[in-house]
Length: 449
Image (cartoon, rainbow, N blue to C red):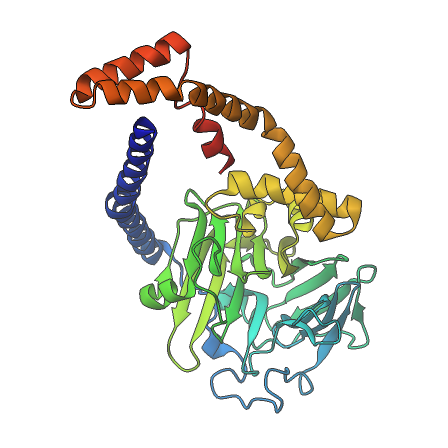
């Protein structure tokens, strides 16, 4: 038993040393490397970024000083001309000013377990106290003239309704002869597709840059737990997955990763997310920011490299916007359908993802089979116990063998009570003679824990 105690003490000390080494040595080094990379990227972006910039929220109509609507977080949608959204999963509208997705309700989810409670309102117009929206637009030079931005009023038939079977078409023509035709479609779940055709009748080639942004005014109430991320996130460039909490971005004000030609970025809550997916193959500069001036807001955005529109020609620019619940099967399907890089990382499986992910898969499939989570959990327990039975059986056998030699062990302890060295030698000789490994009964138990 003393050997077992020493073994567990050794394990505990090893874990403690590794944890302290990770916290006080490795983590500061990693953070320093990230900070150096971020600063270098910001400096490079400052050198190479053209005059065209992603619009700030101050350019949003009515943003900082706009009047709020009565009734708390109910959106102020009445004054704006809108295209209605109606799908099996979503309802809401698109504001024709800026073609902004800023009114979205999740039909299948409620604020509490009570089915009569209000449905989850994911997005709100900027004028509302809980302003939260997604927007796609353009930045251009003087040669391109006015391009669609936050204040642009797109032309459309207001009687159109965006459904999975009926896309909507918006148009905008500027004074330089550029015509932007935007076709917005939505599936039955949570993905919006934006396809813009830019026709140039000006007689001169021009350049424009596409941008996308997700802006949130009110900091949501989040639970401070280490196993789940809520805040800004994305997968871009060499950095890969980036997770920035609201508190962290408030301190740093902005984070500018390196340029990327694939990936996605957005904001996530525990159960919901809004994410932008720029057109694959088109280089873009991602950015995460927090602005204190006026109504403080959080923003994730991207700005593409210049897109050349030939004289008397046209080009097409595409992007996706995900807005909805983080359903595992849905996220995985989108990743495969649209070839979105590591889109499944939108769901945070925690540090022990290699355990939580398979366990979720097992419970989820059992629930689909049995139709009851209680039964699914019971079935999972039985399956896990069955899988570990050989290990448990081996542990019990080892313990039984140890119990058989217990009298001999007690005899050795009494005989060599004053000679610990000889006592240990005799114990080891006993283990060897009886072919017993005292640790063999511990490992199976540790694995099950």
